[in-house]
Amino acid sequence: MPALNLDHPTLPIVKQKFPQVRLLATEFRAQTTLVVPSDHLHDVMRFLRDDERCAYNFLTYVTGVDYLRYPQSPDAGGAAGRFAVVYLLVSHTHNLYLTVKCMLNPSGDTSGINDDPSLHVDSITDLWPGAEWQEREVFDMFGIRFDHHPDLRRILTWEEFPAHPLRKDYPLIGRGEREHYKVVHRDDA
Image (cartoon, one colour):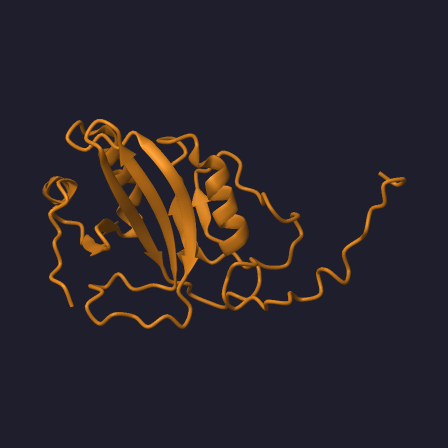
């Protein structure tokens, strides 16, 4: 296994600013990821955007990951969780890329559309307005709710859809949604 080279210039700056926060940094194929606890995510993201030493002015993407049945590393440093919200940031000023990840663990059953309080994270739409639709997609597909989002509603499925289809405990063939879907013909529209 190659040695870990965590020499990303942003990491010591963030650690200096947030010494009390348990942060985890990883690197894979020269891509650095900063894992941040959900209760500090918004503060760290604001710092990454506003501090001139970081200046991450561009949010490339927001996505979700379901790690159900994924082998957890014993050295995960307490960052293990079933779900992750992943943010890809770019600093045009410093020509740097950084992935920020927030791990979440559900507290109950994930097969339906229940509002699990442990699957909440603060929205970053006040920092990067372009995150609005991307957070809605993560909410729709994974059921992760973004607190303080200006318009958190489904974006790819209809409002009454009975689950979150990118969760790994959702059946690949669905639960009968296609069989009961009303077909609209051109003449009816």
